[in-house]
Length: 116
Image 1 (cartoon, helix red, strand yellow):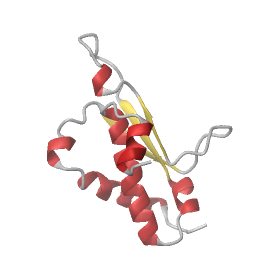
Image 2 (cartoon, helix red, strand yellow):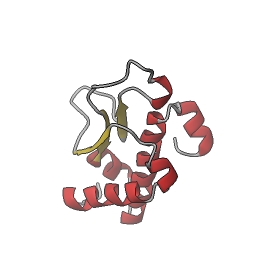
Image 3 (cartoon, rainbow, N blue to C red):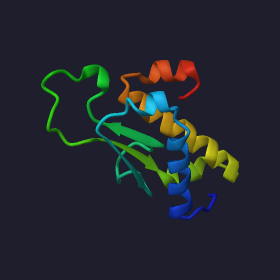
Image 4 (cartoon, rainbow, N blue to C red):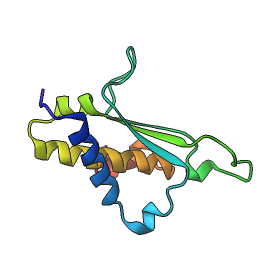
């Protein structure tokens, strides 16, 4: 498995977030981004996970709730990458993929768009 420190990986996630166009970034609402080393024991191996209420499902009832959570899993991404450039690309794809879930875009559509 490719090695990369937690800090270097978190920096790549921050860079991927910085690359989100401003007009989309402004629409991201009530979301926290977290980097974890591993998927919880017994869970399906994922590169990232969106947990929350997508913007398309929020109504007038949506207020005073805890933030949605986007988790990026460091070791899972490192395990599928051969080079640091691969990691940069996969982090970007994963960040965009999970943000798309926040916007209500499902996995099937993301696969069609090349973010699966």
